[in-house]
Length: 81
Image 1 (cartoon, helix red, strand yellow):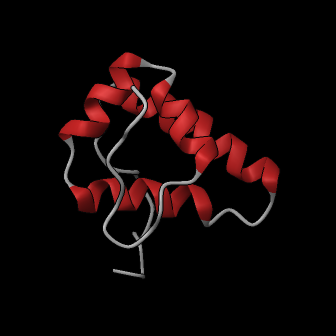
Image 2 (image 1 turned 180 degrees about the vertical axis):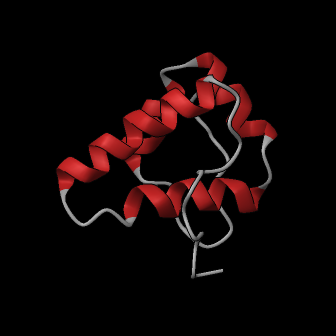
Image 3 (image 1 turned 135 degrees about the horizontal axis):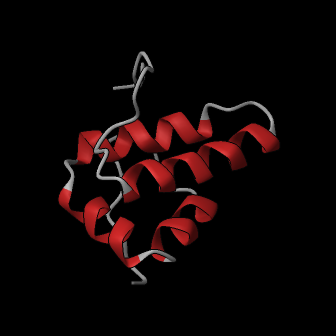
């Protein structure tokens, strides 16, 4: 899947796009959730200050979405919307 939908405010970062595209199950869920929900995932990933944190969040996002989670849990949410 080369084209994935983005969020409402944030652009889809390349590393997250590649990770989502690598899993057909996650890509299908990604296309099914709302633009606002996609924005929440993107913001959660890019809000990590260190590269290590960002990579951990991408892995957690994939794991959570594989389990059917549609939004990041236990996070205040995107303040940019």
